Length: 150
Image (tube, rainbow, N blue to C red; front, top):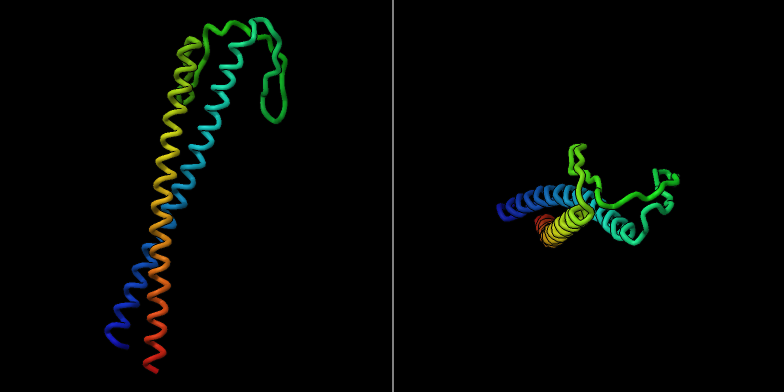
């Protein structure tokens, strides 16, 4: 086997290794993106719910979802205090305005994270496509070299 052919095979192995690493990174970023998208969706629902509740009078009856398409009847109390989860199963009591501000800030952070992850994914996917094209080209050159030496 010629020196040039062996060098091309080594380049191809290197490209394949890099492509596998990129595919692993893509999978990791896609998983992160799914988590962020779920959080964005949840925060949008929380924001909309808080805004909608502000327009309902205290004492009105509500159907409150408890999961599994099940609802309970409840009576709306005052919205002067909202209990907000802050992580690690810890909750704090906030004013309505502070709770809405907190939800909006979290939503903004998650949307920025979403944009960042999507940008990273786009860059890695472009690199992966470039590597795939180079690998195909190298593979074709190797095949031509092998056939030419027969």
